[in-house]
Image 1 (cartoon, one colour):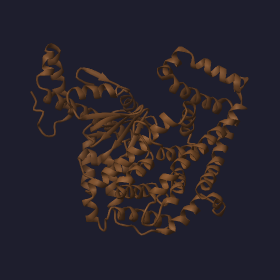
Image 2: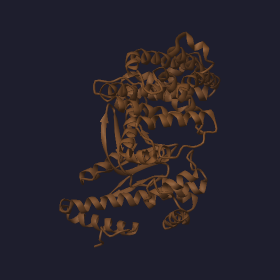
Image 3: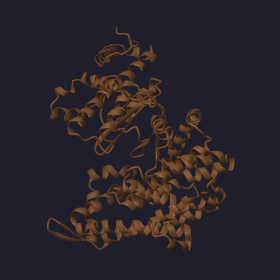
Length: 520
């Protein structure tokens, strides 16, 4: 039998070892209870090898199509190279590293596949483990097998722009409300679509948070030498970064390296709180109808909804089970450990400043809202957590009021819409009845009946917005126009919320923020 502990076992060798083992188990199932460490090691390595092959296939697709997503070819290639060759973030990639990476990719002979064969292989790819095939949607079953063997490794799957996004590594899971959190301490394999710079990934009610991403951010943002600031926005970014480092009592890179463990841990904490905040808003704050509408508008890219979703998650109030968003968490922490609350809020501000680094306009608008609400409590050398605690409930309540008004204004045109389906004109009331009849069809009902109170509104509103786009296009155009208008309206409302009558003195949110940032 092959030695499983041999270094650099090939895909074919591990595949053959797994095949022999499964064959032996067919006639002698007692083997499964005789050498659990060996079986666990075999299962982990075999899952790794299959996911590596899948990742290479996806990477080949990217190369042929030239579509490397918003991350770009260089970032995707460098990330995949580091993973495959196990190169840590603090080590610079060399030309010889990239050549070795390309050689490893060639070993899989994916160039022999036609485009059609490649696409078919990726679309139908399944894992084979312990005598059974696992396709899409079988994450929990695979993890159950690994857990039964005592493995600390797990798999997380999601879809990003129609592409399968997979992470496999060591970690743990925790149930929070209706959501399951996957915290990865290390990653053995991931698909090229799992951008290492993205610290959190979501899939329905499942959320993955990644330590390797936090370490990469630490290395490439926080340990990076200060850059010359060519614009006021970049100067502000550097001021915010230095304010955060000062809160960690860091004076030079060596000081910061000594703080790496704490810094990375608190980056992870902050992300977990933010993602937990989303669960609070979806599970405990918004009504099922409001949540379904917000999801529908978010998927369409409506800016004010996307921005407010992030704002509300950060300000999510504490629940009976202890779940809350980052702002409420930091208020509580400040009572016992003010230094920690101070440094984590400074990092929060730095990480949410998107101006000047080429970020999308949506992220810059996110900066506008997140900063505007917090600026009254920020001082040059301290955060006024006491005042923030006093103002918290009022601010959150007002923000919720703005959000609900926004959803009402966006949906109002649909109530007056005329839908034209196959030449038949229908009022909203008629279209509503027809849509509900469709959703009652057994095939459709099967999709939402397991959790009717939550899933039915999701199916209803996503289809209603889709019907509006298809069968009442003028109405949909009006919704898009209102979305653009509401971005500015919501900005004025937030300025009024934090400045009162002083809002008239600022033409927009960024002017208000820049005025307040002069204290830095």
